[in-house]
Amino acid sequence: MFKLARDALIFKKLYDIYTWLKPRLFSLVILIFSVFLFIYLHSEYISWVELSGDKTFLTLSYIIKNILILLAVIIFIFLNRSKKVVEVKKDYKQLKAEKAQMEKKRDHIKSIKEKGELKTEYQRILEGTDEKD
Figure 1 (cartoon, rainbow, N blue to C red):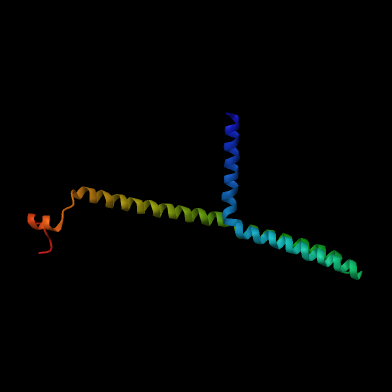
Figure 2 (figure 1 turned 60 degrees about the vertical axis):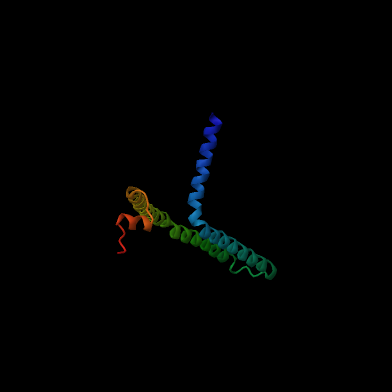
């Protein structure tokens, strides 16, 4: 019993992570790529410093690397901060529109059912209810 409850909680947490990650996946991939790019470029600079022996800007390179990573994270947070609010409003509007559309369909089906049995054009002519005259 406890295992089932634990598995349900784990599934709920994984689903929460998935719903948080889904709209942000592209920007998260860009963030991770940017951070790895900054780290790679910095390691290449460090290799160049070791070969050339010119350590003039070594301290500055660490500061620039960390500022760039921090800036990338701040931009990621800033751009994705409003996604949740926009998507919630969009989902609410979509749900409201879909609900109204379903009500229209339901009313249309109800009106068709109230009309009764469908008749052919020949039957309507025989009854005198044909509107083409």
